[in-house]
Image (cartoon, rainbow, N blue to C red; front, side):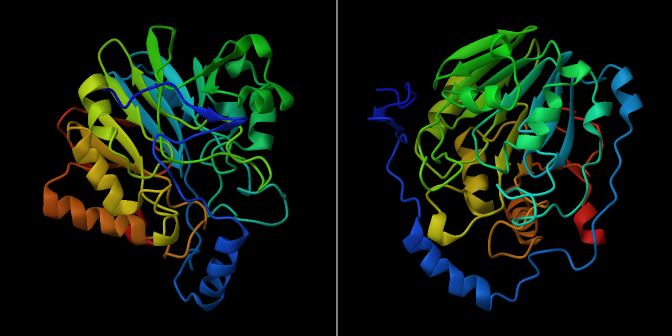
Length: 337
C-alpha cells in the first residue's frame, strides 16, 4: 500500500503522515533554561556578507538547464529548463510576527525584490514565518516581474496569500500528491512530517508540503521542512531520480526531531530518496532558530558527506550557479568568516 496519499484531517486540522510531537507551552518551559544557559555562537560574531547577486546574469539562459541562486535559509531562485521558480521567498528582516523582535537576518538579501527577473512560479511550502514573510509577499504581489506568475502552495495557505495581496486567480493550492503544470514545469506536492500555523492557536489549519519540480530535462526535490518518516524511499522510487535534492539541515534539536531533520537526518533522507544527483543543504545560515552554533549544521554535513561519499552542492549566498550533473560544488564561504 502506498504511503503517498492525500492529506487527512481531524476536524479542521490536518494530520501528519505519521504521528508527531509538537511542543507548546510545556516545550517552551523546557527550552527556556537551555537558551539562557547556551554558550554557542548562534549568531555570527563577525557580520556576514554583504553578498550581492549580479542580476544581469539572468539575462543569459542557463548552460546546463539548471541554475540555482540560494538566497539563504530556504529561499531560492530555481531556473529549471527555462522556467523560473521562486521558492519560499523571505526578504523580511525578521522571521517573526513582530517587526522589532524575533530572529533577525544574519545578512541582507543579496538581491532586491525589484531586481528579480521575470518569475513563472512562486512556490510557498507552508505558512511559518521563515518560509512565508508578510512584507515580502506584499511587495512581490505588486511587482511587474511577478505579475504573470502562478502562485503554488499547500491547501488553505491561499487565504493568507490573498490577505497579503496575491490575486485569487493567480493561486493554486495543492493537496499531497496533486500536481499543476506551469510553463512546462510540473509541480507536485508531497507529504512532509511537520506542522503549520503562525500562532499557538491556529496550528495544523493549513497544510505543509514538500515538492517535486519536474522540467523538460531535470527533476528537483525540495524537502521544505520535515522530520524523518518512512515515505521518503517511496518518493524517490516514484518521482526520482533527482538531479538536485534540497533538504533542511538547521534549526534542529532532539526536543523537536519529529519535525526537523538536522544534518544526520538530511543525509539519511538523501540516501533514502535514492542518493542520486547532488545534495543542497538548506534551512541554515540566516536565522537563529535553535540552540546550535550557526555553522554547526553545515560543518556536520561536510563530515557526513566525506564519510559517506555524498556529493554536496553548496553555493555562496546570492550567486546564480549552474548545476552540472555529477559535479559537486563546495564553496565553503562560511569557513572564511
